[in-house]
Image (cartoon, rainbow, N blue to C red; front, side):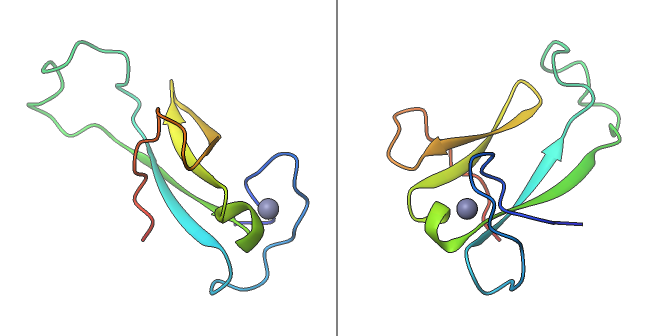
Length: 85
Ligand SMILES: [Zn+2]
């Protein structure tokens, strides 16, 4: 499922769950629809997991941006807490 670090410029292979940080991202197929329109039904969500190695997790986090997962510096103003479960 997870093969390597989610940072495109890092090639660390995923070996141990206890290293780094695991992210659960929900891909909402209704994204882009007007807010409120989809509240009366359950959209089918696609859930994917991403992993940042220990080195990357200390400086980067993952955010969902327009349906794409992007790495951003943890101290960036646009930082939105991604659920790191
Ligand atoms: Zn990495």
